Length: 139
Image (tube, rainbow, N blue to C red; front, side):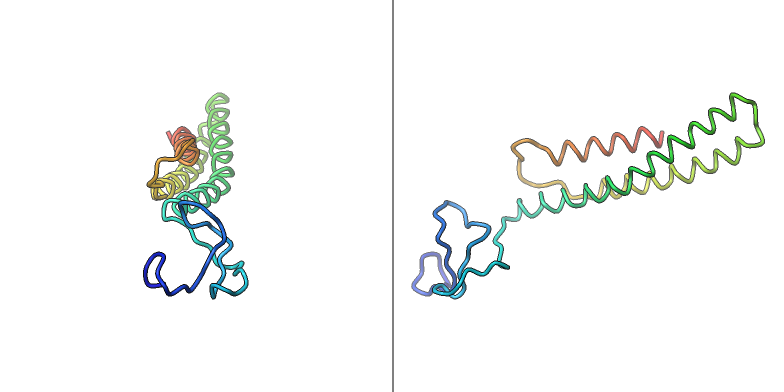
């Protein structure tokens, strides 16, 4: 309705809790449960969005991190074998991978941090861990 516990009831949920439940809402109040309706706090949405973006960045950054390690090893071997003709080309390859990792790091920095204090700080810890891994490969 137009006020909490008001006379006009447009939707209803049978759950008993301090906060509105995520699922189980009937619309109209005497109708069927609308499975496609979800009620979510802003903090929960931010946390879910951050987790989703983090997972996408992990998937995108894994091959780049492997490529950076491979390029570093190629440069190291070329220097060890004194194949200086190849070193310049290999360093360009490495610079290209590092540029891609820097872009990934920028995307990681742009993920909004969840505003509420999380019980286990899982998302924030994973964001920091991935950021550290990318930074290590770029430097």
